[in-house]
Amino acid sequence: MRQLPNVSHPNLLVGTSTSDDAAVYKINDDIATVMTVDFFPPIVDDPFTFGEIAAANSLSDIYAMGATAIAALNVVGFPSNLDMNILAKILQGGASKAAEAGIVIAGGHTVVDNEPKYGLSVTGLVKPGMEVTNAGATAGNVLILTKPIGTGIITTAGKQGNVSESVLSEAIDVMSQLNKSASEAMTEVGVAACSDVTGFGLMGHLKEMVEGSGVSANISVSNIPVIKGTHELIENGIAPGGTMRNLDSLSQVAQWEHRITENQKILLSDAQTSGGLLIAVDHEKSRRLLDALIVNGVKAASIIGETIKSTGSNKIYVSP
Ligand code: CO
Ligand code: CO
Image (cartoon, rainbow, N blue to C red; front, side, top):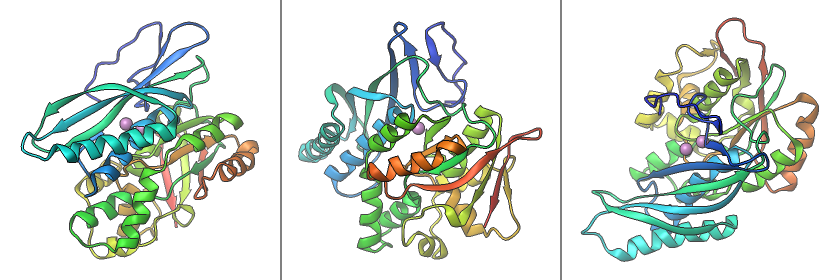
């Protein structure tokens, strides 16, 4: 998306300039539409589960903006020589997540493709000015992450047949979980900034937040929730290509404390699918937000660090 020109329009409240999760277009003073699209090839074997995960992932960008999702369209690529029942199962998985989210899937489009791909183009609504962007953090905010990380490493190990059933099923639970109730807790309390953690990994999405907001951040590895079994897979040499590219792209921003190991750097750079919300919230509201998240069933929600004043360029200081 970085190749896109910076578009501006008086009604476009959020566009491409801050690498935000979704575009926000103001209809009038009371209502703005929030628009996003996301689709990708299967990351798990079961087609229904893949459909659920892809739909949860697509919806997440709406929730990250503090918006209400209302409707979606299916975006589908499917090989002409594959059993159409597989496609039906993928779409049923997506429909089941849409029902859980309380949105309608109103149509879609399918093209012939060499490998299956699935996702949603989602429309949401928000009151203009109430959208939560990744650019609103100020120094002294508390950083909260709502889901454990590790799904990129675990699904990569899964494709190689190198992961236990229990670890993989935990990752599938995490990826299938909607960020809806986390988003509702966030808008109830009121927060400074938010992004969902997806392909750029925890560090990459925090990088966009600190750069968009003009702050730096301190995070501590021991406070970051991690799916059980992820550490062992990294020790066994699982290092997804996307994750390693993420790590390479952090050289200007990441300030790794000398005790941080290479494996910890890989973990924090791991490309996530349908990851949690990364939220920056006023210090005084952080306890209330954590409580609201727990009440809403977001059990993994954890304080992982804080934003600080940046001196010159925006940095992320990572301690053990
Ligand atoms: Co996003
Ligand atoms: Co996205």
